[in-house]
Image 1 (cartoon, helix red, strand yellow):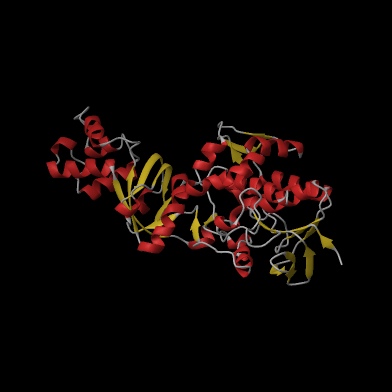
Image 2 (cartoon, one colour; image 1 turned 30 degrees about the vertical axis):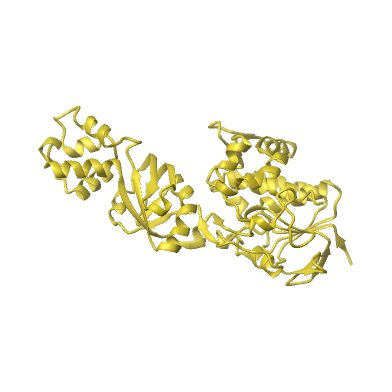
Length: 406
């Protein structure tokens, strides 16, 4: 019977990196994937373009993950964005940052990354088995000894769980790792879908779908979460909002929806202009209609809807409107309210917020503090970041650290 040095469960970015790292160190590695092919979710990252990482310093990078960000320090010290670029250069993959920030393969094709990783796994003679779903972890006195799949038993003194979260279940993310971790008494924090579109109560958004609104600032409008803010480009949908700012903010909003049912937002759609600045802008000319004035700040469909919300006859000149109407319109332009009521669940979530508690994982090794020889890496842990290469960099870095083993 073969005894492996390491069994890696899951073949995403984290799992493949852990396998490669251990195999390069001479370890006998088995990589188990429940789907018929490796890296299915990796192929979909960045809209298929694969935003690998970004050019931020480690300190700024960790800040973007919030209060748990410091957990990544050891992993990033081992494999930061520069080291990740070097790793792929070694595999024959050229990368670049066309905007000076987001780093992509020069092909802008995720298959370039996946093919390079698969070739390295083959080169290192990693034993890759697809269609093998791990169902049970085997222990002996709190030491891992192997796993049981639906087909057979495999033995190893080290196990890495790299199964991802719950987002995009059609790509294999069904929470298998949470069940495995729970089976050996690891705590799983509350799980919420993240990086996804949001739905709202207001129906007027349906009429504003034609344009992207840039440089939108939004914040949660109740005291218990007043510090939650986001900034970026916004797109209105048939029944809600999407776009980069929404994808980033969703990780903060979805837990609040679960708790409160709905979440009131305030959005500045006028590139940061406040009421005084908007009023001053409007007073520059008295010849335009109200709609024509608002259109100097926003696309026409959105301008019409905000005028309607303010009760303004937008065919009139601004100075011909009643004082209360003018005040309402200015306030709406400075801060547009929107009520978030829901989302489409994990089926549309790119990542998962929550996971295996970081308190039970050694950040210096990614090894469990409860079970010897058990490691975690990637999204299965309670750590998630915004759009822009953050989560993929974390997956590669944590996989690299976990693959070093003790």
